[in-house]
Image (cartoon, rainbow, N blue to C red; front, side, top):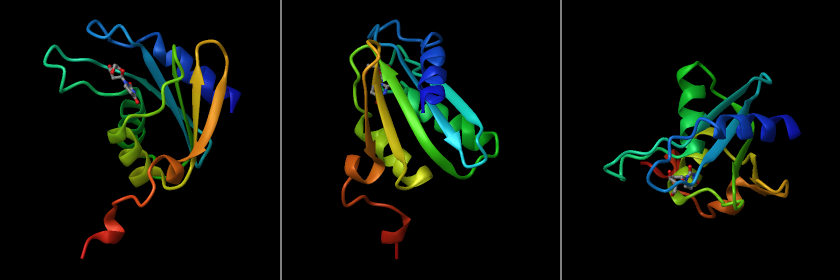
Length: 126
Ligand code: THU
C-alpha cells in the first residue's frame, strides 16, 4: 500500500495544474503487481481537464493492463475522487480498495462500491 502511495506522490510532481494549482497524483496496481501512475492534466478550456485517477487508469489500459488490485490518490488535502473518476474506477477495476491520501501522510481507504453505490455499468445495459 505504501508503495502505491509513494508512486502516486511521485506522479503528483508532474501535475499540470496551472489553473487550479491543485496537484493530484494517482497510482494503480495491476493484478500482475505492476504499478502505473498518473497526474492531473489541466486544459485552458477547463472542461477537458483529466484527473490523476483517470490518467493513471487510461495509461494502464493503454499499456495492456486489464485487471487491477488497488488504486491510490494523493493531494494536498486528501480529496476523494470526483464522480467521473468513481465511475471509471468502478467500470475498469470493480470493487477494489481506493486509498485516499493527503500530503501530511494521513490516508483513508474505501471500497469502490462505497464511493459509488448502485453504480451504473454494463450489467445494466440490455
Ligand atoms: N482532480 C483530480 O485529479 N482528481 C480528482 O478526483 C478530483 C480533482 C483535479 C482536477 C483538477 O485538475 C484539479 O484537481 C482541481 O479540480
